[in-house]
Length: 275
Ligand SMILES: C[S@@+](CC[C@H](N)C(=O)[O-])C[C@H]1O[C@@H](n2cnc3c(N)ncnc32)[C@H](O)[C@@H]1O
Image (cartoon, rainbow, N blue to C red; front, side, top):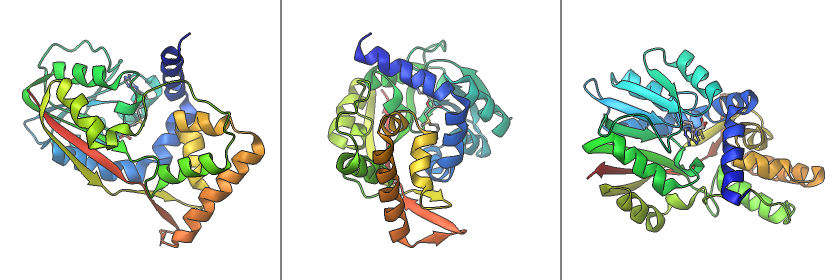
């Protein structure tokens, strides 16, 4: 097996795991709901639009699009995620499938949204080109990416803690950098090459809600795939140190909300028009 097929296997098996799907839906819901609103704004979702929501997960973006009256089709390769989405958004249609190669005819949709899905593609450029194929010319795509290393928030803190306190010999299956598209210089050429024009990238300050400071570690450990794999491969003592470090940073925010804490989770949205 080469690195990329290991990566594909890790992604498919991870998201098919009911505990991870539920962990993601619970742990990241507040942050992703805020971003879903901005994604729906970015594609001007409304009663006359047909929108394809790729990597729909538990349906957080589909719910927002549907609330605005759009006719929504959600697609995800995880059957567990599709079941969660179907119960959450009964008005939308959901299909189990791979966003890298879809059965839809060319130019089938007015808009495509992808909430935090592109970095899970083994080849993000090819995934975006497939999204362009099913989008009508002039239709809009919008997708979100978490800011990673060096950012002041959940993912930046995680990579900082793993870098300082983790086992440096732990390696993940080779795969595309999960956060590179948060950077305009990486995103713009890839999006343009995939068949889009009118590239825009803007910051979206979002927040994760955690009940207890230790829950930030758990959100990654129990509700993610790549980050969870990085944490689960750490020796027990190093995991404990990373957990304490994230808890300490969360505690130091002191911004209590509904009896818990709001942790910054900065992301970007990229939007563009199908040429
Ligand atoms: C991080 S979750 C995002 C869920 C939701 N869109 C959101 O904004 O919170 C990523 C989702 O992408 C799905 N996924 C990853 N790669 C995929 C692919 N190649 N085709 C279809 N779904 C994929 C996973 O099963 C998972 O549900």
